[in-house]
Image (cartoon, rainbow, N blue to C red):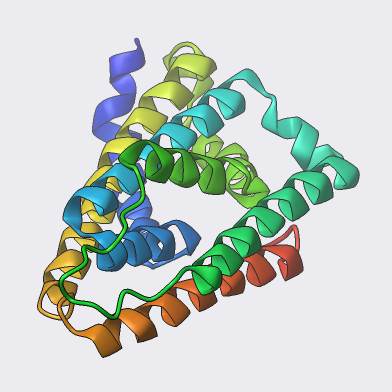
Length: 214
């Protein structure tokens, strides 16, 4: 029975997943940047985008599609560099955005749909995420307990819930810390360059990352 998996491997899986999720990575940096830039709602929408991409990665791992990235250096590099270019593009767009020096004028906000899509694309175009699930999830799967595909999907759903909780915490805390700075014109100017630098830095990091890193 698939439920036989729960009392044995799931506790270990949850512990390992939390240890990985608490450590900030590219997805967390994107979520924090959006939260500081536009507030809690934008941060939580970013979390939803990342979680959606995580689900697609997990389904790919369950169906064995991630093996393509694992076995093909060309496929890995194509996905990696497309993702890196997208991140750098977002950073450049941030640099080019205009400062709102007039406190009477509301800061232009990104549509939540666009923020969701960006979170989805950033996480989806990270081949290291696909390889991570392909290598990580099977360690907690036992073929004697039923369908391997079903077990991977079950563990993946648990990972998504844990990720939503930890990423959501990062989003809320980031927005709370930035709230008192939003009315500061100097902070707005600095924030634009910091956000742009974060995106460009993530893009460069993604481009230089090797296949063996997660």
